[in-house]
Length: 436
Image (cartoon, rainbow, N blue to C red; front, top):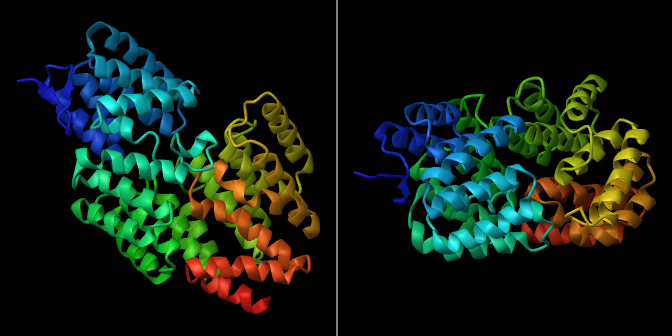
């Protein structure tokens, strides 16, 4: 009997054990649950010629920023699939390998064409999705809508599959259809509760609809079941810290950070650990709370080890926050120069908004709030091009808001706050609106 993946697609392996381990590894990846690497290693051990197991293991290495191991596994997958792979598997391997080689635009283009022919290839379907997916990091201004459009086109092929429901729900949430997105995500979560991606997506929906109490209850009750080695353990904790900040409880936010988010304690990959640390500490500082120097020092050391040079725009934005907050003008100037060069060479996907953010946060940290407003206000609508989620990007809008209030522009601050409060009831924004 031929072996298949969980979505019914044939696999070029004659080993039932390899196929079973591959299916397990894929589901663990789809749910951000520990053990995916071990399961995929077992698939490779059962059939060393199984190309899709090699490329899936490469993808898992890549998610954790082990680029050399990822590229080595991808090269092996290309070799194997060239010998015994089907047309679908050859395309599948090439798409994933291109992404690991820095060819994001090519990977996205190939993925969209691939899904036209093989819509149930879930390992490819997930690539354009998510806050760190190919759409989000493409520099597109409409990537939220693009995710929804693709998901809705594919929905007929997935039905009530738990993995697809979470992906579809999160896409609607990020695109502003929050109630619908939350309901769909909840269905996916109920179908598989051992699912870090589902809880993460629900935390986003609760952030967007102002349900801080719901988010606190969900995370408090569910997180103990999630091993600290889970991909999203630190980031889901970051969401809980945001709830505390919304309530004005800086002490609790810092306590959550110290226990579960800071680089010393999290096992998250660098793109998560650096951005979570930088954004939470910057928020605390921008909102007027004291962040101990040793806390910043730890975040700085980890960030500089992880992203010493410009090249990952979403990380570059957060590196600018770290440098500006800690007075590293020289480091920020060098990163800004590198970004400007990449922009001039046509190699900066988000475009001019990223250098503008860097200049704006530096002005804010230096107390030049009028300069911050002059820099950030014209590009506010373009921040979406950085990628990430709305909750992550809101840090720039928050910076602009505080700058407006400190620069003596209360009318503009009120206008922005009124738009935000119309979208979701935020205790913090209510406090700020009263202060204006």
